[in-house]
Length: 526
Image (cartoon, rainbow, N blue to C red):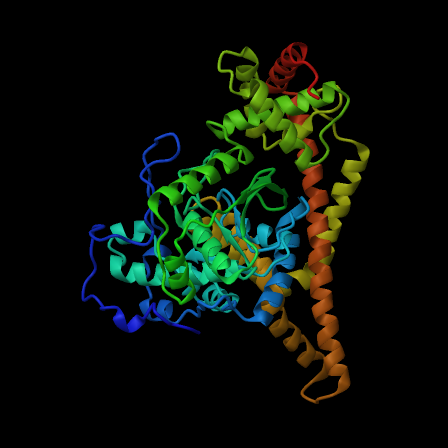
């Protein structure tokens, strides 16, 4: 750990909080987005108001470009991410990772809690250094892992203005973390940054904070000073069938890479390398921030509301079916929906948009997707195979209960309780289930396996004891996987029943009438 010129002893510990943003803070956020909309600070959750100064000052950092995390923690986290990913997603896909000789800063919109950084980390191949809300590094369990992963805490402007923290301490923590991240990126590591600075539930990109731009410019300056390959900003599109549903589909899209200019003077580059944080100019920061916004925004739904976005998806499926090219994957749906958005989606005077909104809301009201349409743009019925597979799924769930209940039941029950009782917002639902899937093999399965081993082999230390423990751990994993497969089969059967119920109702008649009208007007989408 290095302190160098960013010295803690130079920091004067305040005796009281301040309630206003009276001095400049490192999180110097723009007051408006690219279109001039006023900035809205995030509403603080209860966890965000719990400031633990001592733990924050002890978070590991490094200003020489060495990753502050533990290598074993990275490997363990990669494995845990795989388990969490398989637990919460039914299907997942990602574009090939764009090549980068230097470091990379991955930026994306932020509507799905800790799921967002997880899917990006999985899809890329560099060691990640991350910035996160301050309590991510100080919470029980999660904080322990975050610190060993090398996560750097951020104290946001919202915490300062709410009086949770004073601006001087926020500046110290953020300067230290930003320089750590910039140094690591300069030496070839990657970072995952949500440039909006908050999680939200809107269908379009919010105003961007300047943190990702400032870290990017500083990392480019450090790389330039050290003669290393220049880092890039890599835009990422995160896509889901329904982001807050368990066992939904996920697609990670890599977009345009943004080159980061080296804008610091030789003197300031040297100061950065020596361990002193130096701010980039406001003009350079704002220009890069706006480039990120303009490049990233089209990769989000970029719709005025979710109702409109669902109507675009429905139009994409209707057009694809009419062209005898049904959209079979989420990636295909994303691209086709984007074509609809750019061709007719923004035409407020187009009667198809209103019809598509009404039809899409009938589907949404019944928990159905646009994938419910068959090749003739009618609601699909329920086949014999779906009946039988649904029954098989129920059998699989019930047959694995003796194993899944003691091994996975408590943590999934806890995840459900915390998801429904949290004030973190809708995006926290899948986050808690992801954590249950991640931590099961680490914290929950071993004690249960040890208890089972004890009951089977007694207190005597024999070779069979180790075999029993390993077999129990494997059985927990296999039972959980089989139960999830059964849940998927059962869910497909229930979804098919909902399709049939809708098609036989007056709402179903109205839905088919709307789709027929749309299809007669809509040309085949190429």
